[in-house]
Amino acid sequence: MLPNTSPSTRGKQSVWSSGLDSISSLKNYDHTYVLMGDYNSTWDHSIFRSLLGSRFVDSSEQAGEGFHMTYPANSDLPSVIEIDHIVHDKGVVVGDMKTVEIAGSDHKALLATLEATAD
Picture (cartoon, rainbow, N blue to C red):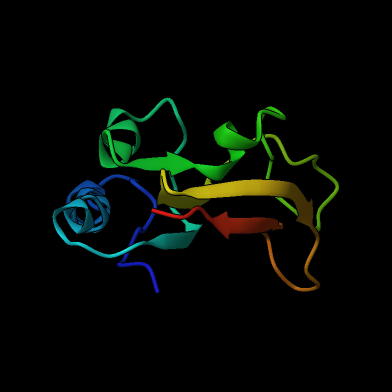
């Protein structure tokens, strides 16, 4: 489960930054991580790029298929922004990746096939 990654709207930037910083701090532990959810951030946010650092990758980037637009969904508007992400250690490889509409959600789900590589 992700920490609180509330939208970075007026008055909530510190909560949003704190949530992303706590994800970034996982790079200090000796575990293999796969972290997925609504990050409320894009590659345009330096804090998102910073949390990836030299250890983590974004599945969408690793898949090499371009962006996987997840928001908004289930509306007359097309999905035009990728704020949901699957972030994982570089030792995990992404295969197929796609978005799927979920009834009642304003976000599309990200589905991916992930495989841990041998150390």
